[in-house]
Length: 432
Image (cartoon, rainbow, N blue to C red):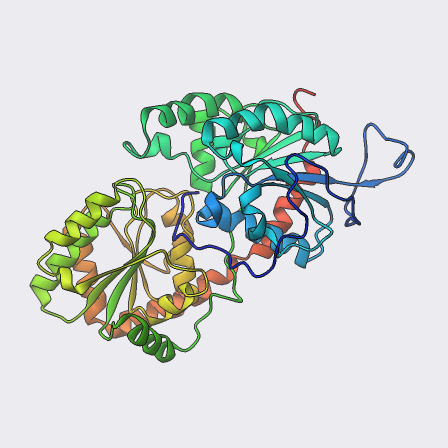
């Protein structure tokens, strides 16, 4: 799952456990998910015991990624809803503070910062993590990204594959990453006991490109946090945007990292230019998100626009402020060329913002008929739909109502419950 808007969890307190590279943390009370232990130890002989799950978190990119949102949301649900497992979370040292929302009963194992670099992180997953799994008596290891799937461990392997972008979007990665995603990850995927994926579209890609049997792939849609993303007071949100950013006119909002060509900012700017030239309406374009690969191309295109004074760039958008932006926007635009899931359109819908969206990758599946669908490679089509929504208030009102109803089906509670079932049903390891 690619980064969607770069939100980072707010840090309030120091981490529960002190830094200790690869060290042990206290064994604490656990939750009562009962499973049969095929090799009972002294503490469990003749009885049912609780499942122990290890979760790798090294790919959260300091909290500014879609995978970070996935990991944080699952952990919150596991502990808030008293999910029935013992959790052992493997955390890079500098990321510890991002996990201080967890209660003391969640065991944290600190990973040295020297393993943050991608190549060393891959080696850590293949060499060190299997040993830690044995030391911590894990039943399951969950790696939430295909980029770090393990080849073997003394327990069941579960991985989440958010998308197979290397097969679907040329130019997204360099040659080394494309090779890893297409060749190495294909081999590793076949070593997993269970693969979780976030959409039917990605499940089809996994079966087609990785050749993984259908009965080992489980589709579990992501959720959204309905305590944060809800309609709220639109006028209050607009007043905040005016006060904080000086934006007082109607605006289209796009929140995604500045990644070219994948996030398709350049065509959106082309469409906005055409919209302005044709309609002369006072609408503006607001772009939120951190710089990523190809960001210089996007910034250059903004500067070349004859309407550059009406294009606002926000940079990183905090998770705290994101709902306010959705509520203040008149239309949320999401013209991405490919997504494995696509949280922002759902979050915008939950905040009563009408959505204009690409259908590439999983997006058509995720937004259903609650959004206006557009061809993301056709700037003229995008411009026409922007004009239609800007001039038709009743259409926007209809989309708001549809979106609010549609997103009720997407909850992190149901996602966490289904994920826990995958843990419980994972079979014995392929290689012990």
